[in-house]
Length: 326
Image (cartoon, rainbow, N blue to C red):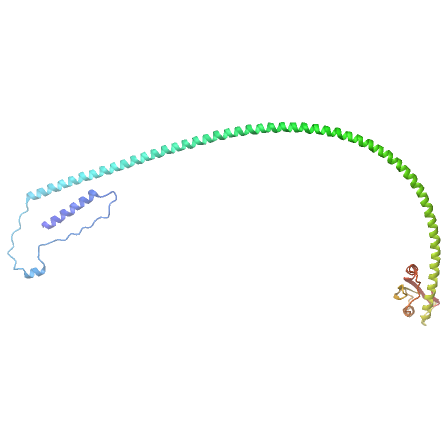
């Protein structure tokens, strides 16, 4: 029984101590295991122990000890409450100190922010004043530069105007001089032109007379040459007609009124390059007889004079009729 009471007292004190000193965030609860201890000896000892004596009556509990125990518990409870109140007071003081410290920190930070904002504002105002000052100075410089530029432009314009006036006077003088010189040159040119025209007329008259003389001589020579060419042409045409007549055999079907016209193309050597019928007689035998006669001659008699050949014998046209060759 005493053992049970002692163990219960130990558990109560432990729980009270734990509740007094527990932090704000409570740790997981402790588990306490208790075991009842008896005064019985182990089984071996029981076996060896002498026989039990006769049971004695249990002693009565001490009332004074119980009262002292109650007083001690009350004192411990009071001490626990005082300690708990002290801990709570310390916690409140700590929280208040921490809150005061935070307020002070926030106040310092707010003051620093205000000071920084004031510094930034002052710097911005100083920069704005410097910018305005620079802008005003720039505008003044630009205005001065513009004034100087306008003044320089005015001076340059006046100088340019003077130069233009001088150039205009010089141009007019040169034009007048050039006009006088041109007039003199024109009169001289007109004089030379009249002389040249007179000379040209005389020369033209002489050349006309000479040209007429040469023309007359050329005409006489041309007529003589033409007569000679005609003579040569007639001679060689007669020779060619004679050669073809000798080679031509008229077919029995040839009748009066038939005519076949053929074109011969010759080389300067008299060789025949081609012969074509330009106008048929309508009778194939008669046409073929003419073609055969023209092709049978290996070399035609042609004049040696190239002009006569090109004009009359490069291409030669012949007509075949039953009556004869034309």
